[in-house]
Length: 239
Image (tube, rainbow, N blue to C red; front, side, top):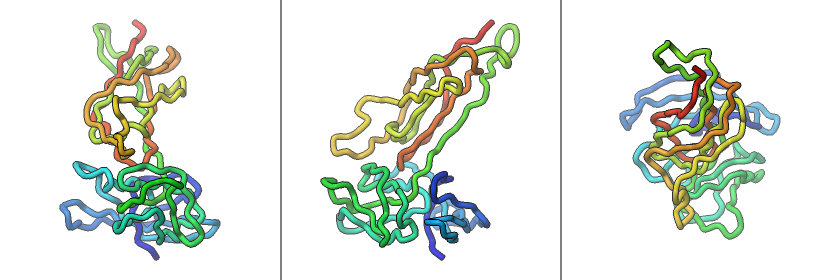
């Protein structure tokens, strides 16, 4: 058995099934969620003991652990780390000193190497990628003549209230159109290449149609933090 850390649900080639779970008091004031997970890796069934990380809040970007079945390395600055034998042959995401590297392959010996030319990093988060997402319900607002439920609606934009979010991995689309719109803010990448965490409101234009009910889909794919505090649609509804 191995003890790994997870940050959320995962969908991909190394899928996992939680067979047992237990919550214990944590040492930092947060409860610890322990999971006994069955995974199929390289065609072989394996079981791991994994612990859910606490939500990212008011910390350094390099400390963010937003991968699944992953490990953390802290030490001398290097371009290759080992120890990920449980992920041998799989595609992983890496957050190295706050920089995002996606689609790296773990060697048969469990080593992960940054792309050629990348700077050495002293803190790594290595693990399976996962996609965080949400689908909103049909918009329901009151008017002079009653609820808007069942009436056609068209979303023109959404206003997101974000907390410490890496917007480079955040996209949004209407449920009908299916065209993903990236969430853009000024200076989304810092000069040193580290992910930039944004807190505040950002408006995202949406391509929608009258065939829908004002529902949208949100996804975040980077191994970085994303917290949406509020979601406000800008839309039209038929009378």
